[in-house]
Length: 256
Image (cartoon, rainbow, N blue to C red):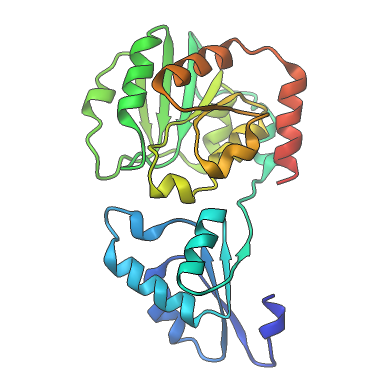
C-alpha cells in the first residue's frame, strides 16, 4: 500500500500520534502513513484536541494503519478505510528464562507491566489481592493521573515503577500468572495489548478482562467478566501444569 504512493524524491513520514500531524505537514514530498495504535481521544490528558488533530491527519494521510478492528471502525467514522496490522512481539527477547530472575520467588506471584492509568481497574486489583492474600501482585509501570494509594497499601501488592525493557524477562519468568486488569472503556475496546504477546512468548498463563479484540485468544488465555471470575482465573493460572498449552502459547506468539 505504501509503495504505491512512492515517486522519486519522496520520503516516508510515519505519524504515531495525532499531535505530530502539524510536523508531518512540514515535511516536503512526503508519503504520510498514520499508524493508529490507540484510541488517543479517550486519554484523560488528550480529549478534543487529539480528536480534531486525528481527523486532520486521517484526511491528509496517504495510508492509514490500525492495530485493532475497533480502531478500523473509528477510521470509517472519518470516512476513511484503513489497513489492519495488529501488534507483534520479539519472542526471542522473552522466551528464554534468564540465568538470574529479577526477584526471589517466595510465594505465588501474579504479574503485570504497562502504564497504570485511568484504564486500569484498580478496584479489581484490590479485590483480587484481598481474595488471594497468599499471592504477591507485582505491578510494573508508571502510575499516571490516578490514585493508587489503597492498592499500594496492601501488604501483598508490590508496585515496582518503570523497568527497562531489557529487564522484563527477569520478571516475566518469575511470575506464575500474568494479568490484564483493564476497565471496560474506549481504551480497552481499541487495544490489541502488546503485553499479552509478551506474556505468551514465555508460555505464561494470562488472566484478562474480556473485551472484543482478544476474544480470538480464548483457547490460550483466561477471559473474565466479573471480579469472581478474575480471582478464579488467577487460582487456575497459578495451579496450571500443562506443558502442551504452554507450547501452544509460545507457538502462537511466534506467529505474531
